[in-house]
Length: 578
Image 1: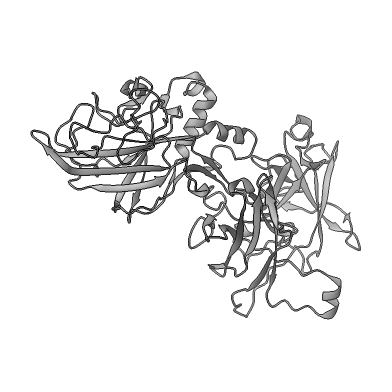
Image 2: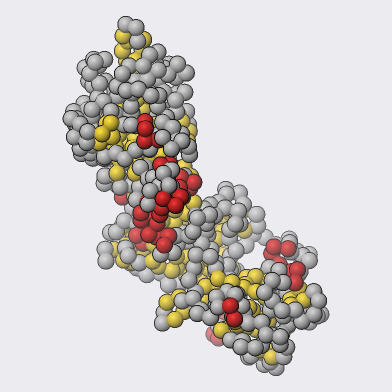
């Protein structure tokens, strides 16, 4: 699983628009829309004009808050990765309507600098749901008898609005984000990772700042969404409690952009923060290659993994971390096999220091080589360890079987004192060879081998994917004595859609439309890339992302011969209540 959604826990639309009579003295500044299933952002220019004030402006803004405490809980429980290893995206979904769309319109997303109340209003047409300075925020009030207060940003982050009795919310000037809507019907999807990490720091500190400081920019009051100032309606003069001067504004309207609110009946249209990260595990135990001058340096590296399961649960190895066990390190050594290749035999094989990058923490048999490659715990995981290295075939007839022995990081003078062996794995290396033949694009047959008809919504399911070449044609003996071989696809991605209306729930997270991106280059881009191990490709899917009582489908896209190729198969299942 490399995606998780946190649905908004409060939202509201606030406005200074005219009521239906267009009386310039009768604006909807006291109205509340906290329980509406729609959120609305607009700017209207020139519905009326007044002596000395010129043409009027009318604005609406969205206030929205998210459950950062749940994000912190999930991080503490290793459900999502640590800071720097995950991206956070705010997502709002377009609500279709029959009014004019604001084309080429830029919306700003800025952190709100004051606590506010959601309220219980519904009316977005006549603006009849007034708060009367009671429960709920509006254009003038943040909540019960609480004005929008510019002093709430006295820490150095300043209000987006000028001083005085003009409101519409108060916002920090930094960090700030934006998205431009070319046609007006697009969804909103913006990376706000920096802001969410600030909120997490503030929640953990208790008062918003580091070590209990008062950096109010770290307090989670949610975000405001509004049209950028240059596209808000031109306003000649400030009108107290109604509007503020905007001499660089637009002399036309941007009316109107609507999104679904958190109270929407549409499960997948509710506003959320979406955490995305690349959780791929590329375990080369099943596709191990000898180092070759035919491949670039990074593709000569092989990564092996060790999974420490205790009573069915991943557990950290207790010895790893004690000083006498290598200061938190774990080592891997390679051996050739016995005569029948059933067990390790002989002395340890040698790694190149430079190739394996294992000089720190390994003991050298002689200058320039080491006998142990140094591994370590995988970040944000429990009980999973990895080790990366390169090794050449070394002889004209390379070994057909290698044995990888995981052992403790003890460093006795002989290399064996107090050494504990954790696991031994068998490897069948492949030797890269050039060819005179220009190979055609590969065609594959794909199957999810452990697909169930239905899953409960609380499940976190692992899907095992068997991939074989389409033209695989075994002889009679092979067919009778062995399973069809599984091919490992380095860059494979999944998509989840709802069967009833073909709505995409999780899109292909390729990180790019043209080429795959590495794990370190884009921590949040390749969020639906498949992992692989000795059994082939696989991925995990948290069923809580899906609405129960519907059928869903899975499709795959593979990066082959320099392009993405969507596979023809699709696999369907239902999600049911627990």
